[in-house]
Image (cartoon, rainbow, N blue to C red; front, side, top):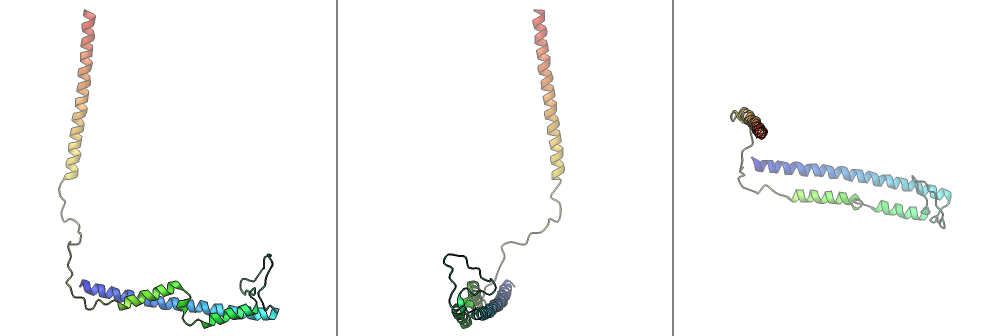
Length: 176
């Protein structure tokens, strides 16, 4: 029973990670395609503006469009576009994607089909008690009340005895 659970969990985990890897690949591929499209637009804008070389500012701030950056110039954008188009495996762009790919490979290699052992349990599952263990709380309350009453009575008697001795001693001093 338990070895079947392990096999099922491994299969579910492997399938889940494969699907997540496929989703991440699609996401990264879509980002790459969007970057290539942006670079094409930036190249068109740089060519239309006549900017062939990178823009240098001699220490001044260059204000560039964040959506379609042309500060690299047409030559720089064209080279960047070539590099982006040359990417064949999107895992090269994302370290997390490579890690997930490695995890899927390791999960696929893991084989628990040839494992033969009989699982056993050391303990049973905890359960609620069937009957009450006794009248513990009631006995504790009654005994606490009795002990408290005895201590209180003892304190009152002790105080009364000390007061009467003191009074007897004062009477004896007055008589003498």
